[in-house]
Length: 271
Ligand code: DGL
Figure 1 (cartoon, rainbow, N blue to C red):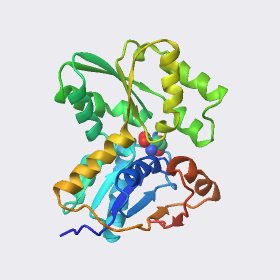
Figure 2: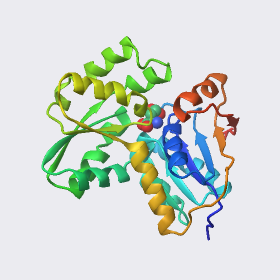
Figure 3: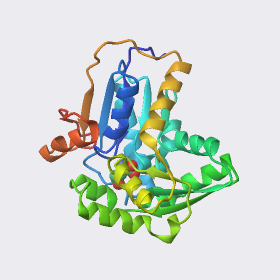
């Protein structure tokens, strides 16, 4: 049986999932976080579903060994490929993902409309978002666009500049995203360009609601912990951050995604 003072496990293909970890620590400051970034295998966006399922199971096992009371798959691509297999593999604690809470939010806040979705090729080609949204609310049409340049662009520090503006508007101008009422940011990295995305629509005087999955997911973690009576009261919890392949440049980039620079420890699950 899990107890409230155990940590929350969060994992992603790399360090982008720190945007989700950041939203969770802001909403739940008493929760200790154990984060795992699979930097040895990043990016997941172009990997096969079976490879992502295998990595996700191994990472979830590691988080279980670390005594986590709940696991969050903070990566959209891993959520698309491995949310079911990971939850089936880890039976005794809840495994949340970043897709289901956003689908629920979209299905309950919109009606008879078209919603846009951007994400990696893996996430978009899986069609998990549109299928789940249709199942939850038949009146919503989801138009998807793979935007594979965005994550590497952000990782290389190209945001809030002319290059990022050009690439973002080139994607948002595509026909697939015409006449949408809301846009789902279906990738860990995209909260960092939310303002630039909003600016494109503002310029066109198009009213659009941006769905930032990090915040929506943080609320669903809170709800799950509350329902299971697992909310922690720990003061100043000491978070831990692991990666499967350490480089100084990953460590430097943590500040961009988490708000603070953090120390990364290498633990290679596959060596
Ligand atoms: N974390 C991935 C996602 O949210 C983006 C980076 C990758 O392709 O691994 O889809």
